[in-house]
Structures are given as structure tokens and as C-alpha cells.
Image (tube, rainbow, N blue to C red; front, side, top):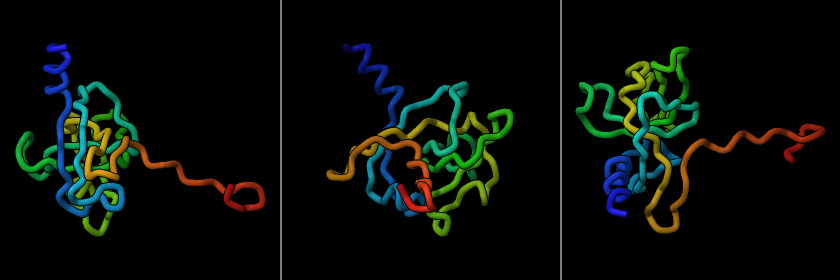
Length: 135
């Protein structure tokens, strides 16, 4: 049990959302859990990730949460986007981010009460059924 707790403290990071760049998915005040990912762990389009602000030297600056928009051919250049493009500074401003700068994947919202649950990929877009109607 003691070993598991020590591993959990190293692998899981708690975060609080401060700005509007990830609205409507994440709101200011949301409290999140992120799991550290080894550099060799693949990222997928749609993943929510945490990293230090890419405009700062590696390992410095505030933590930011963004969504993976595109993974480069070699999986070393990752394009990130905020869900609220009008309020987000993301790869449209600072370009692709090196994979090694991604600290982890956001997996769970634990607060505020009433808004808890698993996080990850956005739901797939609905596809029209026969005759062009929604299923």
C-alpha cells in the first residue's frame, strides 16, 4: 500500500483551470487530475494534455491545458488548440510543440461538485441517419 501511494504521488498531478481558453469543455475553477505520460506513450488527436507554457523555456512558466489537434508524422511535433479559439493562445501562436514538453494527459475532473467525471476525447460528431436525419 505504501509503495502504491508513493507511485501515485509521482505519477498524478492536480491542476486548477484559471482561464477561459478551454471553454466549454473546462471552466475556470475546474479541478483536474493529469497522469504523467512517458515520452514514448502515444498521444491521439483529441487528448487533453498539460504542459508548461511553450512560450517559456522548458520546465518554466505556468501549466496550461490544451487539446491535441494534430500529431506530426514522427510523433515529435504536436499541434495544440484551446477549445475556445477566441480566448486561447495555442499552436496557432507558438507553433507545434515538441512531444517531450507534454507533461501528462488530463483524465478526470474532480471538482467542483456536480461537474465531476472522466475527461478525454470529445464525443464523435453525430452522423445523419437514413434520409439525412439525426439517428
